[in-house]
Image 1 (spheres, rainbow, N blue to C red):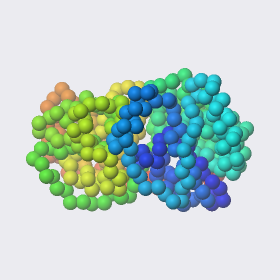
Image 2 (cartoon, one colour):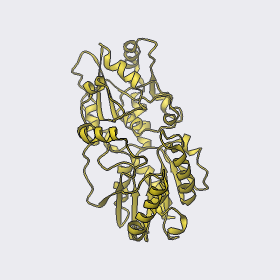
Image 3 (spheres, rainbow, N blue to C red):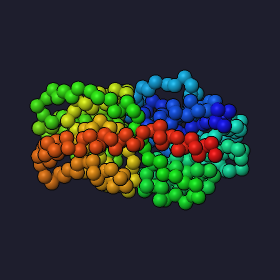
Length: 362
């Protein structure tokens, strides 16, 4: 069925952002559909003048370059946040002029909560088409324009044939008869083995991904300033984080395929988020990627909605010696390393996407 149709993916991030669920999903379904269209950067808010300036003049730390799949057509979104009547009118006109004809014989998969990406009402979609809303953010507790997102959520959930969530926390907030919990996954290349070489007498720790305002900046700063610890940051530093301590630790953005080998040179991995409500339901793919490397994982966070978190994450505290806590964990980690990797193998992306493919084929 899918081979005769088009899949349109509306993404709140650009293709050149750090590789996420969006990228893996688009690449997977490029082999299943006749055509896949990836719509980049459906914005959820208008950046301030200061943020825009910092984005434009800090492109090296804001962007990463990912290979574009020749089987995927990439388009740039012109949808605007629905926070005033003028933007809503624009979204309606824009959809009718440009997207209506493209969606005539297409399934729609949206990571954005903006209902106008699918015409704003169920009657605008042919009954043979599927609309899937994939919730990977806690839009209910989004830091900006909560009233707008509450209205968006009500409408897009009502319109959707299926509502997916990567986190139990957001899954429980969804009121829909066809909802499904589909956590993040990990690609097979994360299980490759590399020689582990530690070139420093200090304990070397790595943070990879998106360093942003809801990261555990306090822990990371303590680690960066510790004389016995060397912290490296790979990925991107969001414009919301402006601290020279992190700039000194920043090693740039690298291809996701190269990360496992880079991580093999470190003693352990740091994952952490602050205590804001928005952060409590986060389900990061890098947790499963970290598990796949077999490296010890350190955090102050309690992401207990992730079944394996409590067993495979070493909880550390700023109230005790960080060096002693980490050294102790490293000394016993070999006892659980193999099990950690084997559990990670049960979370492959391809298994996640087969579940979604079954829904789209119904």
